[in-house]
Image (cartoon, rainbow, N blue to C red):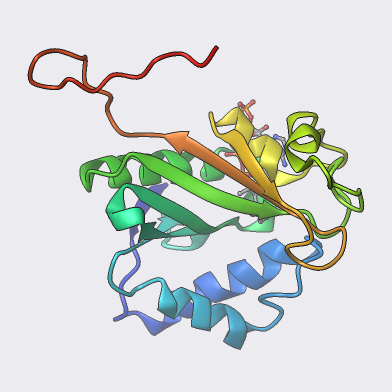
Length: 200
Ligand SMILES: CC(C)(COP(=O)(O)OP(=O)(O)OC[C@H]1O[C@@H](n2cnc3c(N)ncnc32)[C@H](O)[C@@H]1OP(=O)(O)O)[C@@H](O)C(=O)NCCC(=O)NCCS
C-alpha cells in the first residue's frame, strides 16, 4: 500500500475516490454522499488551499481509502474531514495508516492538533437519541459504543473526546468532537518558557 497526494490531473482517480466515499458511508445513517456527484464535489473541494488530501492505493493503483483535512485556527489545528476506507478493505489497517500519515503531514506543516467530528445519526452510541442537556459533558464522559461507531476507532488511535454538539444533525443526533495532539511539546527552559501544568 502507498499513500499519496490527490491531484486534480487524474479525473478517473477522483471518480474512484468518490465511489469509495459513497460506498463507505452507506449505512452510517448520514444523508450526505448518496451520489457520486455529491461525493465528487467533496473530493474536488479537498484540493483547495490550506487542505490536505491523501489517498491510499494498492499495488495496482486501486483506491483503498481516502482522507481530507483543512487548516483552522491559523494552522494550529487541522480538521480531519472526511476519512473513508473501501468497505471490503476495512479492518486491515488502512484507516490507521491514513491517520498516521495525516499526523506526519500536520506535524510537517507545524500544526499541533488534529480534530474531528464523528456524528451519531443512528443511535450507534450511548449519546444517540439521548437527552444530553443540561450537562452534555457528563454524557460525553460516559460515552459508550453500541454498534461499531467510528469514535471507538479514533479512540484506539489516541484521540480524546473533547466535546459533544447535541442535535447537530437533528434532534437526538449529536456530533462527537475528538482531538489529538500531534505536534511536538518542547521541554520548558529559558528559551521556551511555555509549559503545561496538570489539571487538579
Ligand atoms: C472507521 C474506518 C475509517 C476505520 O478504518 P479501518 O481501515 O477499517 O480501520 P483499521 O483496520 O485501520 O483499524 C485500526 C484499529 O481500530 C480498530 N477499529 C476499526 N474500526 C473500529 C470501530 N468501528 N470500532 C472500534 N474499533 C475499530 C481496529 O480493530 C484496529 O484495532 P487494533 O488496534 O487492534 O489494530 C472505516 O471503518 C470506515 O471507512 N468506515 C466508514 C466511514 C466512516 O465511518 N468514517 C469515519 C467517519 S468520522
